[in-house]
Image (spheres, rainbow, N blue to C red):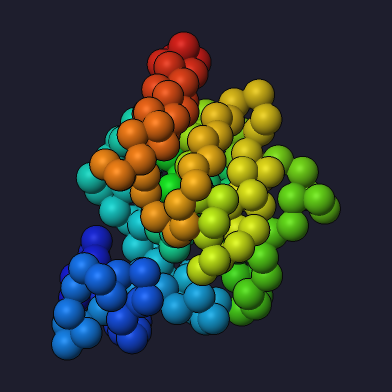
Length: 192
């Protein structure tokens, strides 16, 4: 087991295909939560909340893939559970973000992906949404997450890669991501 925040990550997994070129198959791999287990996601949200209350405050959160899904689900949960309280972050940066889960369904032990066509925007803070238009690992997830972000407060940058963060091989994509992140931070600073 590996420590994660104040709890343990017990969710091992096989080597993800997107990192095979970078890491040996003999290494051990873990995930924050099992995406098919409501209890696992509920535990991850609880650990994140505890960590923030002990180590915070934080100005922002950055999440990649499953981490972005966790962060978005957490922010939605906080806004639903404490509608009059400020969110624990002033901004969020989502890189190849996964679809957030319905926090109320998690409490019932169910895995339900949030559908923005039914709920409208649920994330009312400055966000940067950065993803690859050729994401074959989780197609449509990033668009869903972006649609859950308040249109007046979100920035988006879409690059030509897949399920990854823009890097040195595509300077234009890096510049687009940086611009989206800067706009998000500027919006967060102006809201203070």
